[in-house]
Length: 284
Image (cartoon, rainbow, N blue to C red; front, side, top):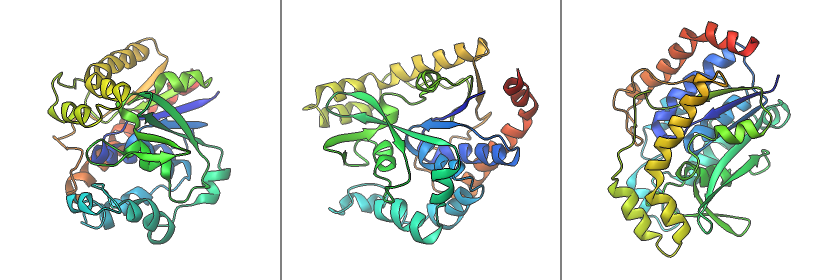
């Protein structure tokens, strides 16, 4: 059996996913490959390095601080992002809460980040091998327009992978996975509204990249279609979905540690509540 796990993005909401993979580690459910967009995969690399409590330590010690995330960083010409990129993607993993690069490289879990090429407006899938300790691919997959600048990798400019492939389940199936777990960060009933001022503004900002601007304009419709596709695969028994029962209105920029810790615990609880069904799915 080849097991894949897909992690949806959602910035602060992905602390639910952190709870999910903590419960998966506790139950010794180890994937062969993981893939995801934005903070979904940025957090899930700690699952690939089998560091159960690492994300919770970041949540409790740093996520609520201005040094981690604050609009003032957008005004810094060296950062231009709501996240303090050097702090989040360099100082934390390489100094403050060390990332286990050795296990990540040799632990047997392949990790893939989705990114959107702003020239083509299409998704690309970057394998993370642990050699880039500034995690440029993770910065790129988190790079939401307006809140981040485009990120250059090998001469190409990239932004948030969630714009074009929020939940890369088809990519995972294309990798030959017999079983796929999909971790979502919104309730089952959730649908994006068709009109979104932020996306309209972003499309105008990137009007000189028409393919990317078009992807932004159609992002919400495509996201809703993707969810319909995912739930259809679930009905066919091809994938197993873990998702929150209640997200309690958590926004993508929420940084209250008490609220986020509850979401983290909700991820653990939702996984453990369905662990028997999950194990049956994996055996079948």
